[in-house]
Amino acid sequence: MARAQQERAVRTRATILRAAAQIFDEYGFSGSSVSKIINLAGTTQGAMYFHFRSKEDLAKAVIDEQASDLDLPEQPSGLRQLVRTTLYLADELQGNVLLRAGVTLAVEQGQLGLRDFSPYEMWAGRFRAELEAARRAGELLDDVVVEEFAQVLVAAYTGAQIMSHLRTGRADLPGRIVQLWWFLLPGIAPAPVVEELRALLLERRGQPA
Image 1 (cartoon, rainbow, N blue to C red):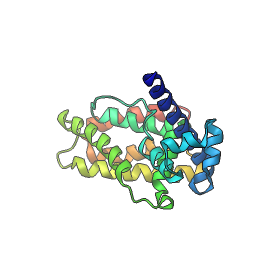
Image 2: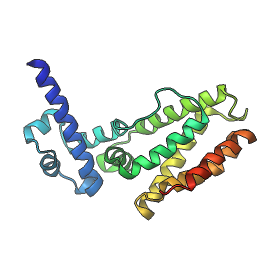
Image 3: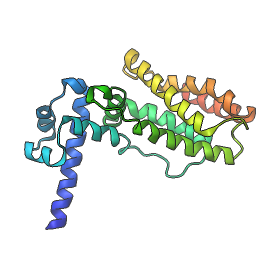
Image 4: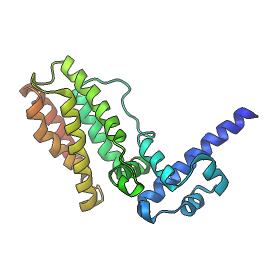
């Protein structure tokens, strides 16, 4: 009985969280309300407040759990996997509501009264692991500082997705990430690696967004 109740509580929390992501994505933080989230989740006010103290608490959970639905590589393997991962994220930002809402709320978190850098550190850490694997494989130039480039990549990616969101609702985001890597790669990788990865980018550019 206790286990069944626990599993039901986990499912209820997940349902509320994803309903919140959908509402935040559609209305923004300021235009969202707890009642809209409860109605979409098909749950009760009591269940909502059992799991989350407030709308702000819900938004923080969406930010923190933005990557929960992603199928990310379990182990780092280097620069090719990093490029593929960033392109995968660009695709997911078009249809994965939890990721999209989490990223948007992280950018606009001042509305929540937050100054939380942890979501950016999370992505920087994942990118850094791939870059460290790339270094071990000889895929990076000697003067590349892995920690610094991981931060640069997160900043550049964040800017690209904001611009894409404003201009096309992120429809052109995969193409923007292809462009981003096209110009970044010569600064971090030896010529043979750049050539190989640019071939991958050209292949991706030929696919529909």
